[in-house]
Image (cartoon, rainbow, N blue to C red; front, top):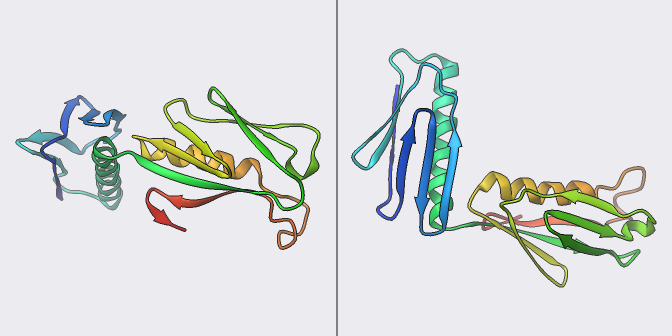
Length: 176
């Protein structure tokens, strides 16, 4: 099995052992791949992942690695952007960012603040009730958005009545 990825002109890719580094106009993104028996090489303007007699497991690893590489190349060309909306109908909730920590105050009238750790390389902007997370790495941006959404998950109450929380409304350019 052999799969190839075309490298765009404005992206530079370097391979050091199992580590792939992508550089573009937005910045630099690197990732360590654990490929085992799979050959990983760069020829001309292509990245080639190949395996002589690929098993089902090796085919899955190749296809997953290709998806990761495409996301890396896309991220250094144009940053990934996630949007979240703060919804509070029962109690006025406030969200404040300090460094790489988000502090959620007065969620459902709770006296104790909820704190969320966010990845360091994610850039966070806030306009009224819309939070925007921007990053070169799709996984970092997605994890930051998921952490915020999970922190305001409602347990033990009727979700149809208590619809307060922080919800993802836009994932990497796609409406939800």
